[in-house]
Length: 169
Image (cartoon, rainbow, N blue to C red):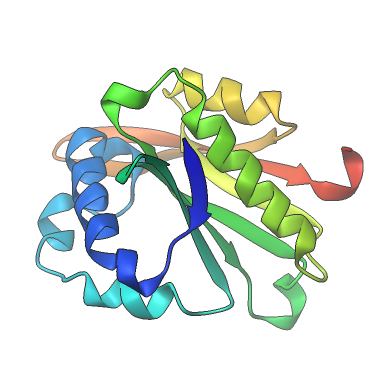
């Protein structure tokens, strides 16, 4: 497995795994498959060249098997924060350390960014394996939003977690 920052040339394969993620785990994302499929890969080309958002991909050979995005905040009062978004590993590659490797890469990148002191994320409360992973790397829960997402008639709570970069090695 190789992990690297995605480039504009990766936009199409990223778009495909994003659609897969939205179909496979709709409760884990605020976007929906129905909305996203109307878009095109072009929107990711621009995102992948910026300096405020860093999307990493895990590859098995040439196949993209997992993704994670680290987004830095722009406003003065929030510039000390970054956020983990859009974490996904394909079904066949789960349980093999891909998610942990991606998360470690995002944390490593955050540590290189001037002024970043903490990393935030939101995770659906029922995703016990993701919560265990985040906790194992030092993330701490600090709140829950009840009924954060609604799919059809079903509600999903989200837990908010934070990693303070100056508190771990």
